[in-house]
Image (cartoon, rainbow, N blue to C red; front, top):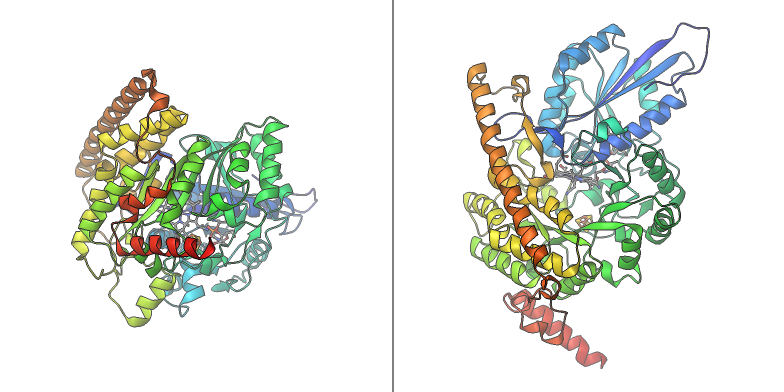
Length: 589
Ligand code: B12
Ligand code: SF4
């Protein structure tokens, strides 16, 4: 993509290569797929910003800004080819490492290394560097490794700043550090996040993404988001959102992941939903949306109903835990377990299926309590998909800062900060017990019997079963078979010998290909087996004439004697929550 104005001067090309790095699997190779799960919204955001700079010819009328985007989860970073590109333009350009999370930081620096050796300017941005700069001393954690390579650190948001960055880069004045963490941008009127359709097609399903807002008012101690994007709600305007939808719809994209961490607390949620409803009902754009919300969203008048009308089909909820003592310990008291069933049933009533984030390893957890809690969730909560995560002190969070200041032992391998590896100590479990119960959680929850229950509940609620099946398959398959979290999933793992982690002992080509081909065949046969099994199950359930009348404890409407449920009686925190509710009721009646 290039954009320029006519001129008589000889034209130059400034290459902007934007790479979203993946991270290394335990096997030492980059996690990359033939088709990734969803497109990277960080990449879409930066691409939108860079495209805007190119259109406005911010390097002057005689310079074309040529932009390339690479999402490493679905495309190999061909270093030799990219270096040839930079050499052909005498190094006039910039490599951007985009949206780099802590677990992606080691890989990002490995990508940077050969480019820096060839003198190409490299800039790194995203949550790792932003979180560290916002919360720590400016050198932690491993930021000096980037500086030693001559990689420029960009902390904070790119909107309104990328222009200066490319101008300083083009004139050889790139600084080693840029820090905008204290200066959050006004999101209204900013360029739309956008990826052309050829990139979106490299993911499974043609989904676009955009953040309609940033910021969350809560204060969870494990959260990095509030320390990077702030606690005040900042929002794109309904016009901006309409532009994003129309630009994407022109390419045939009508399904979107709205990535706001808490759409329910976007202060513009209602005008945005009204606009989406109009685009769907008046303009006929067949919107299909996934959003993220909190556990109190059902209390906002009209929220769930309007979500349904706007085309929301999937909703992600930060449930985190069912023990109030645990929730209090991580400063998430706004999650009221006494409201969980009411909230989940409200989504179910609209045929929308729910994903819940669930953290394993909060202070009161033990392997036994986790097993008990999984059973309670299966039996009593009308949830569809649970995403298990290990409590991880991510740099940029309050939890990490406290441990860092205490000098507590934390894993120095940042590649492991992916919610799948234990990286710190727990008060009641050894690291190996904790790691083991994380793996066990996947197979326990997605047992064949429970998957059947989930489909039966879906059929009873009128949820489109094929969509539910498609959503379930990666959650059943990925963790036990590929040993990869479903949020990093894709179709057909790709590997290249050049993608081995820097510093690991080399592997012979014969051993590399034998292992890769063997695992590809074995793992995909298992995937086919799972798909065949679940499709048969779906067919059996659909053929059952009584499927709409299926009922179980989870689907039973909330009643006063909910207080008899294990959810509300098995922990001291739950009992205290019920006692508190009774006290409030006695005082108010
Ligand atoms: C959408 C999302 C996903 C999506 C898509 C990935 C993506 N990045 O788009 C999916 C579901 C796949 C996903 C998966 C995971 N995610 Co995620 N995800 C998000 C979420 C909610 C939004 C990302 C986003 O688009 N933000 C908006 C963009 C515009 O912000 P941004 O990336 O920070 O970029 C801005 C600035 O940082 C800066 N910038 C960024 N890069 C660069 C580069 C340059 C050169 C410059 C100048 C500027 C710049 O400019 C941008 C625009 O202002 C964030 C939380 C959040 N609020 O950001 C978590 C988040 C990024 N995810 C996180 C994690 C841990 C994961 C997983 C590891 C979870 C897991 N269990 O597997 C996986 C990793 C998979 C992967 N390959 O990325 C963490 C990372 C924290 C950290 N410090 O490491 C976050 C912050 C959430 C959290 N729990 O704290 N995720
Ligand atoms: S509700 Fe979510 S986004 Fe908000 S502070 Fe808690 S973890 Fe962070």
